[in-house]
Amino acid sequence: MAPLTSIRTSEGKLEIVNQLLLPHTTEFITIETIEHAHHVIEAMKIRGAPAIASLAALAVASHLEKALKQSPSPAYLSSPIALKGHIQPILDFLYTARPTAVNLGVATRRLSNRLQTSVKEGKDVRAVAEDVIAEAKAIDAEDVSRNKRMAKWGGDWLLEETEKCGRAPENLNVMTVCNTGSLATSGYGTALGLITYLHETGKLQKAYFTQSTPYHQGSRLTALELQTLGIPSVMLCDSMVGSLFQHHEIAAVVVGADRIASNGDTANKVGTYNAAVLAARHKIPFIVVAPVSTVDLDIPDGTHIPIEHRPPLEARLVRGALYPFITNAEGLKEQATVMVTPEGLEGVYNPSFDVTPAELITAIVTEKGVAVKRDGSASFDLSTIV
Ligand code: MRU
Image (cartoon, rainbow, N blue to C red; front, side):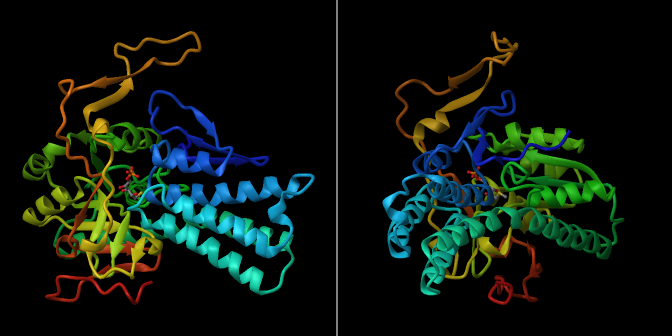
């Protein structure tokens, strides 16, 4: 079975899979407006840094495509300047949907630059709109081939490193955190792409993945993707990483990223830092896989990365299908949201991401290749790859 992708476009319709209902219910939501796109990103019906950037871009494309077909034309299609005045606030608004993933800002900035350049070139308003639409579609389309390149760079590098350490580069056990697969991107995935590549080349024994509470991106989404791809996998609770490293041979920890500072400090799903500390203790290579667009050269280190804190209520709830399963009249499994804390609990710490210092990261893989630290250095020099 082909893996689910998070976004689907056909005949002018833009749809996402509601990731809050996966893995038991596959519901497609049609994105009607810019406000709707903002809402589904904020509510995490779609999540994963590259996927939210793609959706924001495609929502702008869909908005413009509808406008070009409208009769009479909306006022903002009266001139290139009017169009610019209409689109720029939309881009600024979309960028506010989630603060940590820099890819969203990169996508909206890229559309803004395209808009300004086309206006400066003196194009007519329709041509400007078409340029922005084409740029938005390119943002989405580029993602899959870039992911495949990263997977190969990172996978081959890991095999070589394993061999250099005197171990056979086969039957590798690799652990990951959160969900970085086709649901988090436009397809194939970043860290999960690397794992898929190892599986496709016959080098993987098992993929271990953490549940990634409180949203359970691991137990709900990564579990589903690995199952769909037929990749042997084992889930563990977030608190069991140390135990796993003590009792099993793990060749590498491979994770995605939401923002990488210029020294290599990396923000990713909360729990990534814990895994990195434990990986260092057990001398397990810790690999970050992310497109160049995740590297933010404007910030020197991880202390400047804005960390999103989710509403406290979200950490007190577990969402899923009722078990034993109860099927409703439409043949769908009944879903439930269950509160696990005492009512009235007030103190909840709920950051969505943490920052892993570069010191704990062995390699950063982008579509341009594999970056490692110079001997003795605690940080990366990423300026050359961006
Ligand atoms: O809160 P989420 O689910 O959007 O967090 C996702 C992650 O942390 C991913 O690892 C990251 O966005 C990279 S996805 C290719």
